[in-house]
Length: 131
Image 1 (tube, helix red, strand yellow):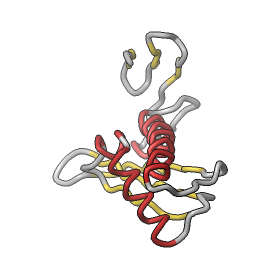
Image 2: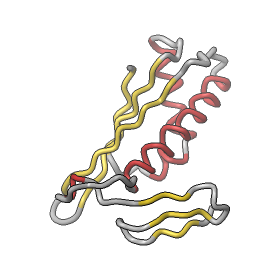
Image 3: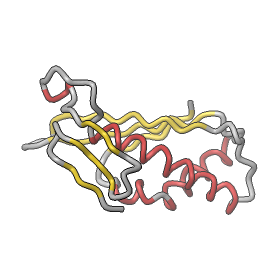
Image 4: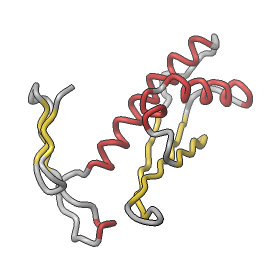
């Protein structure tokens, strides 16, 4: 997927034009924020969608019945990284799976092994919680 990204206060448009977003710097960077989205929100949305797909695959592989009402909420935060820079952290809230105990834990673990976002973001703190 190709895209054009013009700074934090710019425009993100995909080659197909299906995604065309105004970008703003988040308040966490000491700005007033703005009506546009930011890269952290995009990561959150992408991660939630990707992890949901991976969880579906994981449940099938484990022969578990995943509820069609399953929801994944991704909360992305950003803060300072020592000695310099910024660091992301993610909390994935997984709800309404219909899975309990070891079945839930096994499906979550396998989903992280399958999910490309989990692979790409392996150097950040990712907490998965049952919501």
